[in-house]
Length: 81
Image (cartoon, rainbow, N blue to C red; front, side):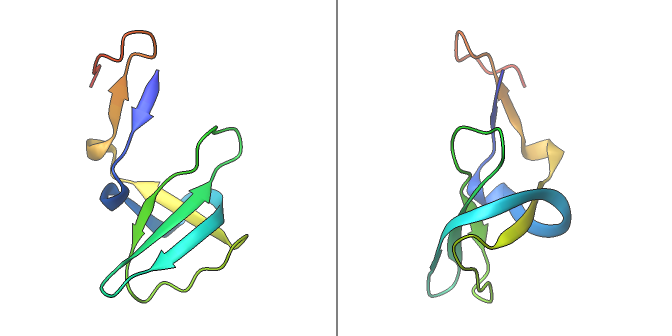
């Protein structure tokens, strides 16, 4: 099973899972953070607000609205949810 979550559906939240910032790119009206989670092969991509000030190796917490999590079959790539 593979989970798919769009960057705009992830958010920094004190109640979320712990991750380490690999990179953060502030943009004019938003930003893009790429935190990594222990045990997850690829870093996530999280859309941030313009106020976010993140540095490499900062610890953050990330959460997602379960209604926006997509589940795929690893073998076939078919959407399961």
